[in-house]
Length: 129
Image 1 (cartoon, rainbow, N blue to C red):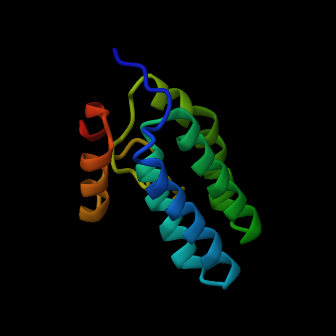
Image 2 (image 1 turned 90 degrees about the vertical axis):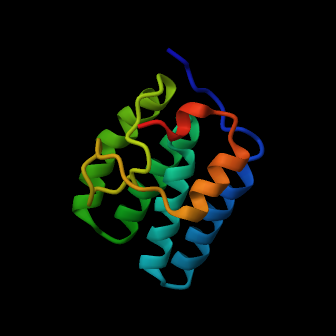
Image 3 (image 1 turned 120 degrees about the vertical axis):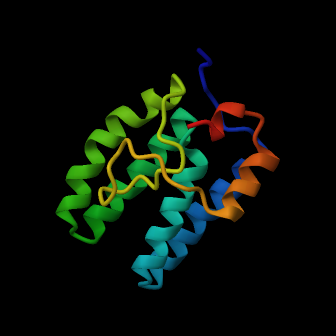
């Protein structure tokens, strides 16, 4: 079993770009666009405990800011368990992380993110289902 720890430094700028874009879109009132960027950050950060948990925290805060009870309730267990599952390498690859999708459902990774992951990640387990 391979334990995952930190996100590869080459992947961090892409993850941070998605988080920044989410914040900018939210500030402009573009809620769906903001959420889409959080989902993309989730896909990139999911294999690594800290980044995975951090995106779930951002999703939980999004739920509070938008008064979305379903998202708030759905994010709490994801926030508590997601990082642990990342640490031991047991994740549903490509899952977008929101309460609108089953937490254990593997999903297709968008092509642009797949290219980023393949090019900038040294973690082979990132793409295994």
